[in-house]
Image 1 (cartoon, chains in turn purple, red):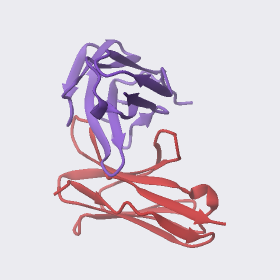
Image 2 (cartoon, chains in turn purple, brown):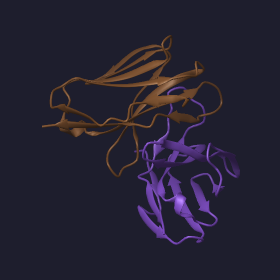
Image 3 (cartoon, each protein chain N blue to C red):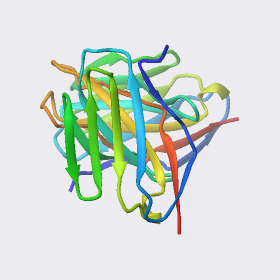
Length: 114
Length: 112
């Protein structure tokens, strides 16, 4: 069974803290993605990675960085958390470019920045 | 203008009703169309996908794509309270990228 796990379901951090969100998939997928989900705005892509050590910016990369040292793990880093980064963060993974293949999502991390 | 438009709802229907959920899009290059279901406090899960125009049926669910009108629909027959969730449409281009463009989601409530 497909499995994407995220390190925390709920996280509360203070402004200025460095925050790490971890995502692990056990499906040997090449692609991994980080989204944030906000009411009225839907899912917005922050970064994605199509291979180990490879990354590409999504639509809203400002204030975030990512790390992919192993195929199964993709980390999202908030270098200096701000209140406008309070959101639901979703990780997803997929196989590389196969028609009909799609993204499998983790349960999400609800991050609150105070 | 957003690439993908979706009515946020909420949409409330009685149990057993036929539900119609819709998205419009502006980019004719989209080739793959998907519907995700997201229960409260969970990640989205794939419900249906279609390639190009046409219909696809899976049990009580039918996905419909009209590329000429840039319009996609999801129909739910005999809706159940367990169908209560947010439904997200998503689209992708053909080619090497697996990047998806999502609608904002429609919140559906099926009343028993």
